[in-house]
Length: 471
Image (cartoon, rainbow, N blue to C red; front, side, top):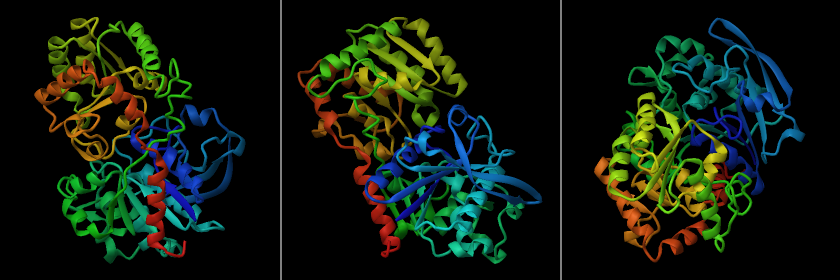
């Protein structure tokens, strides 16, 4: 079975959110199960592409409206590829060769990506058995495969579409419909949702199957999907939630080269202590206090707008430390930076992102905060569990699917709703749990919870087979 994934992100080449982590692991695990899985993504100008070697495997020109753009398909050279799957890049220099992944208006950029990718696939010697598209940046591919005359040879190819985050849908005006390769105009309604062209809605309508990254998130979307609730309810027969996994070869406390000291379940106490000691020394925190951490984007979706109040109340009322790693909305960043002066030995923040530091935080922290208002799947809580760090989560999306509360015989701390009082109460519960007899036992046990990609990768293969039993 040949599977071609189309995505705007893929770790470690380009990462903005969890989408990149999924595309950096799922194809590898599918290949380990006997498939031939590959990724096609835009060619950005970034650290990764500047430090690796590529070869051109295809050259052509696309017409976008009235403008011709030359493009190439580049392949990462075999001796440079340690990803576990082949990866191809759509190089449209005038539109995609940038040092950023997204802007406020990416209509032409990602249309060029999708059209060039389909032109190459359609002209290839071997047509994929399945094309799997991810999020709205590839949302017009299912429509074009089904409706555009130039891709008629692809109409019988099964196409799967995964919603990683339904809040972003890629809307643009009907005035730009001429940019899409010619199709029967009476079918333009497949592109429309609420009087705009909506790539996410078009993908839901035209894909053979629609998945989300956790079962609970699929259920939630039928009630809250930024305007697509009724569409998802209407299309429920082809919708399924498949929980994301994590790459357990990368996230492995025994072999992780980024942490201060490696450890196993048997050596968790000494191993976590060494990593915690490094963090506390680096960020001027007290090693004897329970260490709470947050890693992620400082945006409302993650509950970050409440962090200044939550942290102030929790630090004032409890003998704890908090360490934050993230970036996002500037006013939130500034408020969190200013908080350092108020709690100089109990709180610190690193504004930005550092991969090595994130690994050390997972390895050294006692608790991980994830008070997300929306969390389609969430990977951070799985990383935390793998590293013996107890997650504190809001009961939504994939967090609800992966974290069970201590009160219910589980291993995490859950709260219902994102308010200052709810999160502060959860932090207080965690602080009390830290002093309990079963804390050390619990954090050792959670390391063995299996959130690897093995089961999820097989679930996707089963879905593909359901679309074409002859695969």
